[in-house]
Length: 434
Image (cartoon, rainbow, N blue to C red; front, side, top):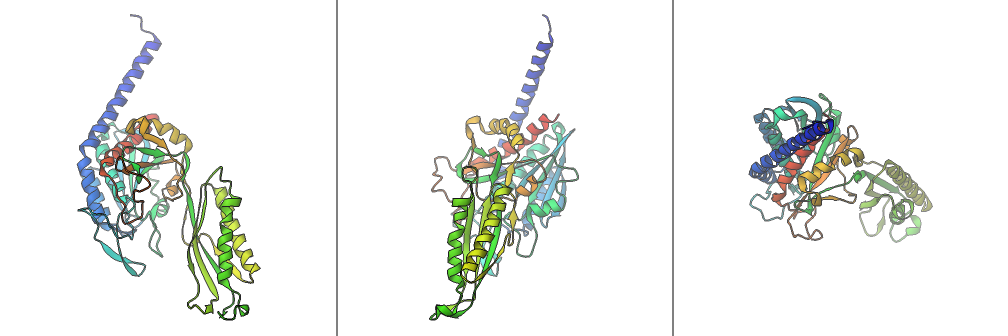
């Protein structure tokens, strides 16, 4: 038999493909093997939720698990965060994987044996505490990924950094927290991270599906405060006043024209919402001041600049037309950049997603006007953030309880796919960099 260069090349490709299949099959088997563990972890975290920057119990369980796997652990990162470092048996890139740990001030209504009964004080009032956004799921899945990859340490061509992040939903008033503080404290350095992957469970996407979007996938967010000041008077003599309530009503109506008349909606969506309006204490007193709180959502820096400029112009000029003044603060207390999936990275990792879930189960999704502080990591290194199905098969996405609600529910049968997806993204990316 004549051995040609082409024959050698084909044989080499076949061997490489067989090895890749073996690694993929290994991941699948190991992920299935720890499914019960992942579910048990998730149920424990669900029953014992903790608010942002208070995830002490959660962090302790994570750290103990990572240490048991021989992973180097750093605790107390950005208040309560945990970072694990797994150095593979071969040289290669550093891949970061992130899970958020915090719960929400929501009282659970779901009838589960592991439903949260936790109560705490929040903003001066007693509230229930619930994992109403699935962060308990994210933590359990990443703990499973750590166990799978630690068991393959000698084969891993690179380093994996496991980032368990506090306060994704926002830090308590007066505190820093979340991804922004982790970045400030150097979580993406020592060793320097080359790429970061993350996922989010979704209660309105069927189990078994993975959805993604290149570019802007979740909105950038700024909150705002608008204070309108007029002149107080008796409600029976409005001509003696400069009425900030009437001026505020005009401002609110005019703000809605920013999206309908200034934003090119054929390119990107956007949102301008006033969610809180306070002014006055009695029916017969026209107050001196009205305060509005709101949120703006955008998918590009250009749209963000447009929104801020138009909001300030509309608020101040409309108030002036009514004889009042308006002060605009944007952001008022928080700002998240756009969650931007690196376009080239997304394209490169699509085969990995399809290998994990099956090509027919990997779907392009529309942009989401919710926000995620994973975006702070993506500002520093290329990142990919995907969504994992958590709705029972056959469910109705319209009727399924949404995130941040007392009836939020996740089907646990989708956790194995989450473990497989993060493992495959990690090892496939490393294989590309050999």
